[in-house]
Image (tube, rainbow, N blue to C red; front, side, top):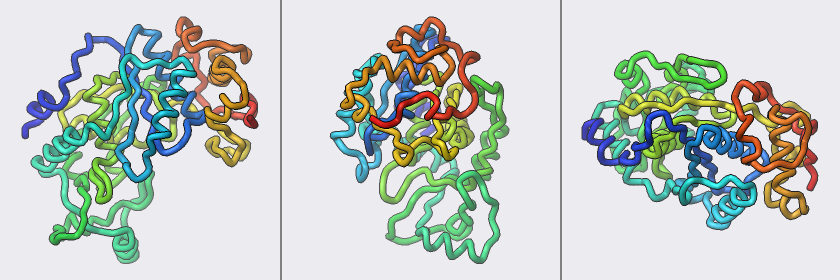
Length: 328
């Protein structure tokens, strides 16, 4: 399959008028939404609405072993409670497997993927005897199945031959809405897995293909996912698709300087709702921490749209205890 055939057959939704902003919120249904999720969803929603654009809700339920129906119901309920209504019904990654398979086959036919049968213990053993670069995700895969093609009937994954991919697409740039033009360096990650043994497409492949299919123009997410951007920009190029722009919002931090979590007393949206607090109070406190409000007054998401602008947003991590009552 040629790249254009893939686009024509599997990405038919790219019909938005030129210049229209389209964002998305893409949680995984493996737990309750928490305050950090609400923050990311608010940013993505209000940015789109500021420009009269579209906002999508995508349920990343591709991992069938961890996804739960009750969490899907909770996500939809929490979004409605927050007042963050998407333009259409929620999309589900589990319904898009054929799309991911087509992308995998396209990359394979281009000679960019190879089968890998290595287990974690195989990789650990190989690393004892071979020096490899270290990237943001740890030591690179040692290339065992790249240099010695995997054969046999055992389960295998598909890895991206990063050197070949970089040679094919050439130098890459991407736009950060806060920091401007950035240069992508996918080689820093080594040969990443794009199709897993125990599940369909990896996060990188599925998210890239879905963003292209939905015509996402701006990806708004936490700064903890910024390291994923070079790999996804590379996949956009390999699939002959135009990448979106990106905004990586600051993280809410606990008193120990680590990302806010349950160990700090952070509550889920379910807990917040059960305590009797309102969505408007939560939105006001999130907007206050972000720099959109001078004090934590209750507001609705649509109340923030008129004055929503990236240059007003806080750029540094947000100390949660300064802005949020964490105990329900």
